[in-house]
Image (cartoon, rainbow, N blue to C red; front, side, top):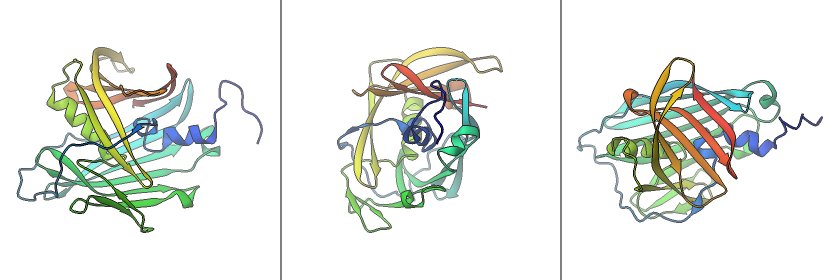
Length: 256
């Protein structure tokens, strides 16, 4: 393959990372297990309202557009939901990765998100596709290949993690403080832990006028980090995300 201009040069792994699971899921978390308690969803529990999710985002590396990302959250009834993500690479990005689709189905247990199934589909790398099924009574997640990943306490999948962080920020009404939120994510071969904190209130202008936002950052020790801006006036809807490596912005996602 011909070498790309230095300002565009990036490995296939890096291109894939920003398109797989959005910018938020692309950062490498630290390992560990959360000690928070969880249980099987109680269908009789009061259903906690979920903020609407239905939007398209533009993915960029500097001035280069990588593609678009569509997020959608629909109700399945009885306190359960389906959250989906579809990344559509364009231009140069199509040379490195095909369309990516991720789907998380979860239920609410009071105010806790309890994942049930998660699926990952990548058009150009079929051997990377997988499904995770969560058994919260046995505290294991199982792949379709029969691999079991044991976990302790409350866990999330790659997509439900994003909603869990959003709900934590909402519960705190976007208050800036030193308080942190640790959330455990299950993948087919390991457990990962992220830690987040509300760090600032900032005004953004994405082209349609100023937006007063809450800034949330990943704060556990790592070369990589994540910055997320949410709009309290729209139910803390995410309007911008940045992936950081060694202090420099690698990728950006903005609401169209």
